[in-house]
Amino acid sequence: MASPAASSVRPPRPKKEPQALVIPKNAAEEQKLKLERLMKNPDKAVPIPEKMSEWAPRPPPEFVRDVMGSSAGAGSGEFHVYRHLRRREYQRQDYMDAMAEKQKLDVEFQKRLERNKIAAEEQTAKRRKKRRDEDIYCAPPPAGYNFFKAWSQKLKEKKLLAKKMKLEQKKQKEGSGQNQEQPSSSSEETSGTEEEKEEEPSFIMGR
Image 1 (cartoon, one colour):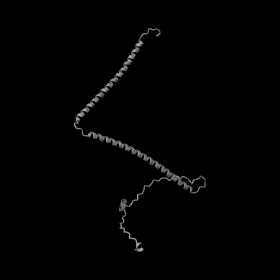
Image 2 (cartoon, one colour):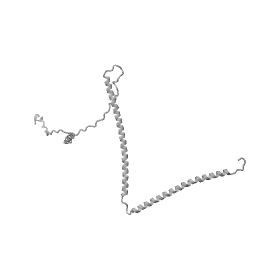
Image 3 (cartoon, helix red, strand yellow):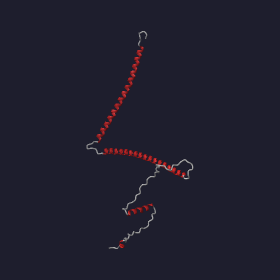
Image 4 (cartoon, helix red, strand yellow):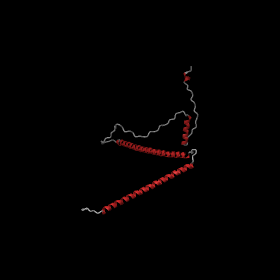
C-alpha cells in the first residue's frame, strides 16, 4: 500500500506558455485582442450583459410617515428635506413629459409607416398591372392571326361609333330647336285668342 504522504502529493500544474505583452494603440487593436482571446476557447460561455432598463422615478409611498407640519420652530434640517422632495417632484414631472413626448413620436412613426406601406402597395399594384399588360401585349399571337385585318376591323368599329355619336348629337339639337319653337307658337295663339275676345261686341245690356 502507498503511504499517506505519497498520496497527498499533488501533480504538478501544466505550465502556461509565456505570452508577449501587447499594448493596443487604438480601439481597433483592442477589439482585435478581445476577439482573439475569445476565439482561443470557443466552448467557453460568453457573458452578454442585459439591456439596462430605463430610469423611472421612485413610486410614491403608500403611507407617509414624515408629515411636515406648519408649526413654528422647525429645525435646520427641514429645508434640506423640502429641497430633496422638490427635486424628486421635478424629476417626476420631467419623466412624465418625456414619456408623453416619446409616445407621441411613436404614434406619428406608426402612422408614417402605415402611409408608406399603403403607398408602396399601390405602387406595386400599378407596376404589377403594367407588367401584366406588357406580357399580354408582347405575347405571341395565335396561329393564323392577321394583324392588318384586326387593325382594319378596329378602325371600322371606331368610325361607326363616331357616326353614331354625330347622329345622336344632331337629333338632340333638332329636338331642342323644336321644343323652343313650340312655346313661341303657343304664346302667339294665346295672345290672338285674347285679342279676339276683347274685340267681340256685346249686345247684352249691362255689360
